Length: 220
Image 1 (spheres, one colour):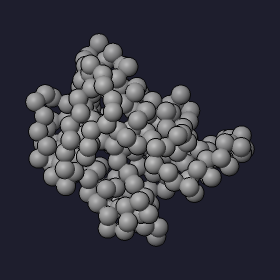
Image 2 (cartoon, one colour; image 1 turned 135 degrees about the horizontal axis):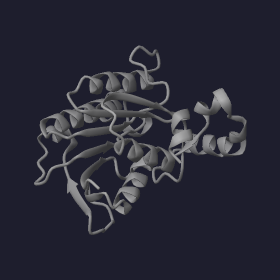
Image 3 (cartoon, one colour; image 1 turned 90 degrees about the horizontal axis):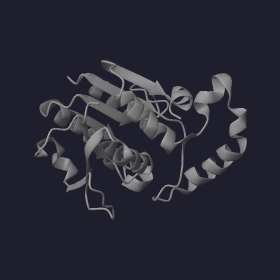
Image 4 (tube, one colour; image 1 turned 45 degrees about the vertical axis):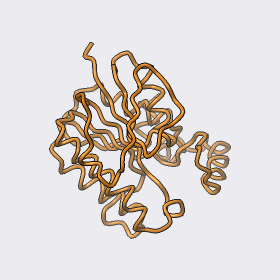
């Protein structure tokens, strides 16, 4: 079994937390480095925490080779404080991480995007996600996977009132989302994380988009 080293950006978020737990438990990964603004309360023999300034992420230095990068960076306009601040996190940081991958010969990059991502969308959130996907797709990385979940389910550390209400409603009515409607059903962060790790273990070259309905069927 090929041994690998992984890097996670956004390890404190909903999907990132799940990714961290699963990668630390996966025997195929020898080292798991998380890049954060400040250290988190977590210890594990395989875990390496690296505090960075995300504004200079392209110049980040590591003393070992990273094979797989998992990016779960993301915020909301309300949390970020403005559209410009949101754009910096959800577009600039993600794309610059991708550029770091190119410079550091990373083989595989997997990114959490969003359902409805479209560079031509009239909705700002969806447009930024779409523009990010377009920019990343042009990077010279052997394997790139973009994952577009619908409403993320799970216990988020960051409080998002509207999202919590939506989760409750989706939890009650989720049975209605079947067949063609499956892609709209709320998806648990663990399912997304597992789909990303499974994709990393499949030799699928090029740029691939994984829609939420596909993850519901393959990410369990």
